[in-house]
Length: 194
Image (cartoon, rainbow, N blue to C red):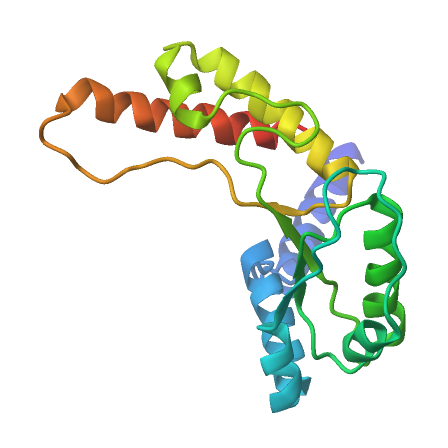
């Protein structure tokens, strides 16, 4: 009886295995690409141009600055005419701008906030050349980690850092070039570890 049950079960599984959907699942890249294409097809020309529009708010430095958002900026964000801001600092302030973009605009596209964080945000670290001159990549990684934490806590998504001169200069020799690459990799590792 057990043999008959095993044989029938095996035959049933073999018969129904042809009905199982074996199509490969799309990768994350394919899903993201399809979503981007979908949003782009919904955008008007003005909205596409608006995504390229980057305004500098120019309100100063520091994560605790409180400022009000001008109504003109809110209206432009609602209309999809602003894609990113430079120098818009402060978690509450950037949240207020972001809220307008993702809740009140037609396509709900989030804003990007950028800032120069070349050698620190609130905590100041040596300039990149000084860090590289230490020949201690773990120090570079540590400073990048703290820069990323401080900038992210102030609502900054995008920093113009690290500043690495990767142009080839034959007078500098191979070791210096390797050091620049090592600096760059450790800096990126530090920022990514947050």
